[in-house]
Image (tube, rainbow, N blue to C red; front, side, top):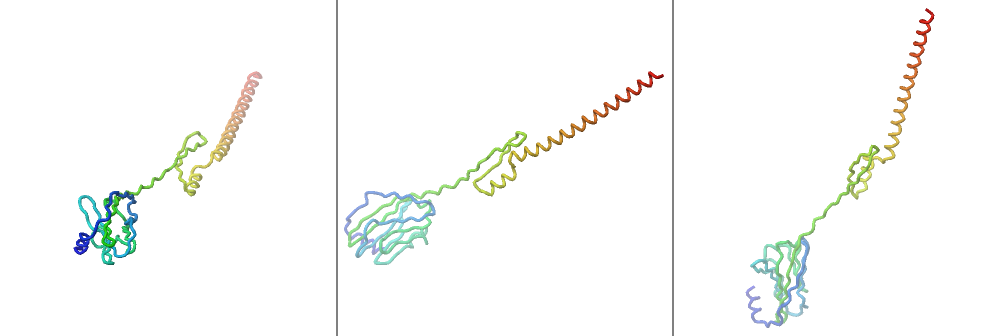
Length: 209
């Protein structure tokens, strides 16, 4: 690395990054950063990361060799393309929000590129349930929770039968009640007739005496 630093001090600065590119990436996703220049001939590239008050190397290409072992937090998740210099970090984390910077040296000319990385947490999904009021034959209300699942809808129909089915059963009950009332009226009529006959017979016997 010291050789690389000495090499930087001997090159000519041909461009300095004055615009920081902001990149938003979802936590757990893949971050891809392009140096923004065509790497030709004899080139070197160093990627660094600044989070909080610390700045650490992430990866670099020096004399045709790739190095990605610098920062333990990125261990096993960092790749750098040997041809394009693109930095790839997989499974990016929310605490890795910060500034990434590329130092590129091409034929003794140096340029830089900066990226402000914003890692955001994924939005959790929300399940919405609907409740349907079903009126029974006696006018009461029953809540029948329903979802978009077809099987749940079929179960709801079995637990809460249609209104017309209940009306049919209520009609049978009403017919039975009417039949019982008719029987009671018939019994009362017979009892009244028997009692009337007994009274008439009693009056005839008294008159004959």
